Picture 1: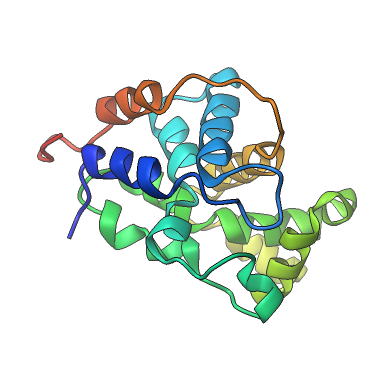
Picture 2 (picture 1 turned 30 degrees about the vertical axis):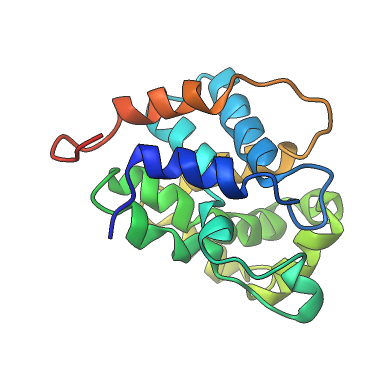
Length: 186
């Protein structure tokens, strides 16, 4: 069953106050910061929406605090897709789907990237399959919208700051409304 934008707003209102595993921000703060960074980079509505919703799977598939400490990969990048399919384009969905593989890619092609990851991101990297081989990195780049996923990933990494002011959720839901598929009710 697809979510509506109203459902998404309510989900963030209800569960967004949960701590973002191992980070100094909540799930809501992380989502808003990521969307704000995308917006400040000049991203269009679809990429801002992907940035906002890239970790929605954490809210839909609660695994408790820091599941990586228990050896759990919650597959959050896939979990939200059935709820968003029919609401947004493949470009939005693919940026969400591939943002974890984008981390694996960036670790393979930028030696300093792995060292800069938070402790929880390094743990999840191992659970998610580790650093890509050169062949896997090339294959990833041929995936639809892989470059957009890399952009979302880079914003994701920066969206863990305390005392970071962003516009409210309503601002980003309005942007999401502008890029909804035509046949979808708001």
